[in-house]
Image 1 (cartoon, rainbow, N blue to C red):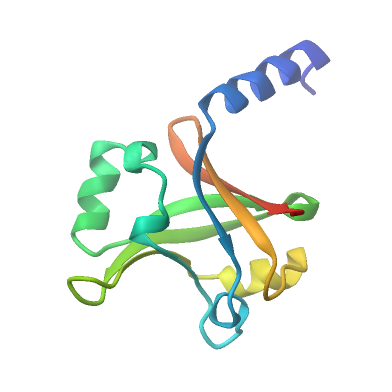
Image 2: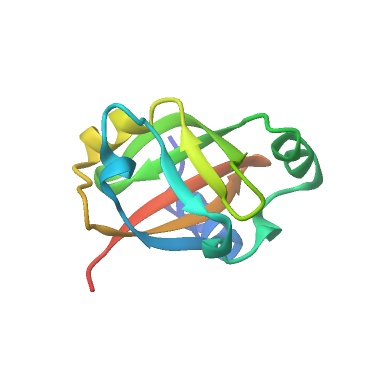
Length: 134
């Protein structure tokens, strides 16, 4: 068991490295069981600085990066992060492979506004989904 000082230092480190990736209002397709993914338009992404060179290469090749996602109620899931280029003007980032279960366990609903934050644990990309009360 970690002592409180170690836990505090770990939380401070995570907070210093956290980056706001996007804020969006959830749509029907974001929470639909049949879609099973969160879509964020490329122009809604604050900066791609949360991705390292290897991840940029993987995503650029239309493949997925494994990510740990933490949400409301401390729900945690191992999901996938990828980029979809549907056309020259329709480009999206997506969290997939289990997003639907994550939505059900966190109670996220259509019209909820969320913030997507990135951070790293032992060098691995992670996301925190925070519900925003406007």
